[in-house]
Length: 435
Image (tube, rainbow, N blue to C red; front, side, top):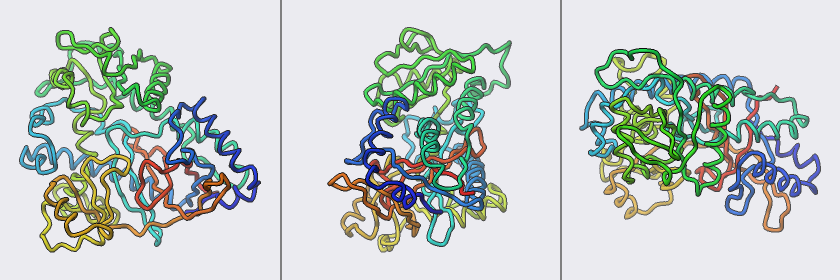
């Protein structure tokens, strides 16, 4: 793994700031990345991450294997009953909904496993974004633009030039998969093309742009789509209306932990349970995102009745040991671990065990919604940023390589680069294969 940082600065360091500004203005206007400034740095970095062919092959293999592992894990957790999934942080009020919601074709039509490469060249799974993974415009529109600008600096190839079409096709297939209520064996009569609602928070402009991007792609496939926010959702009978139009299916780019506190959530859940509404990203997909599930998978890594030999070996070698804090003794040595909240997003509520006090550790243990994951010695690469004077500065930064699972197949990568713990200040850079 390496970056194009040195080639980029050798191209013309004096024009670097102007190139970055023009690129990010283009990304905002044509790519929909309207909130394109993170902590004083442009969100789109003028750089690229290059993986060797063996690194790409292993990443694809691990992504599909962990997809199978998570599908099996969620099925086992739900079958184990409330005592198991409540321990993993699942709210008691949603026990029934989780157990009886209709199964989808995929655990998640589009999921993203976030990997880190260690200094020995080994991939390690850090997180799983299965509910509302971001990155669609970045790996399509923005990556195409950067490839045109940077591919002449080194022999490289895109990982998946068709990733946008693959994403749209996965949503299309899931939207057409019937939401059969619990106990119903098959659907009666022909199934018409559903009208799909895409639900988002309109005040978050980049999220709104992402839903509009997906809607445009799905309309090309023949699906009628309605984009809406919560203020324009209403209930009639056992169905939901978005902007006054009845919808047969919903994809939600809206955190379910926030949605669950709204009056409409009960109607949304009930409509899904009885089969009148198809939820493309359902409750199982949300639970799969919990770091507590990763702790459960680690605990069950030797379960031969659940995981096959390849899956067991993959968990042991490529999932850092992860524990529920509630399972750990008071004298546990937390210093070599990273402390993570079950559903923390974008690096929120993630703490380095080497930097917390004993009092803070005790507070996290009492909170009951944290895991401890062994720290990975991540490999770094050079990355050019703008300093306070607006001049290019080369720093060592740490890539978080988000590997897409699209319709249960590996689909490409969305990488961010920044501090050891990836947070909302990280920049996007494309990931390509070195030739």
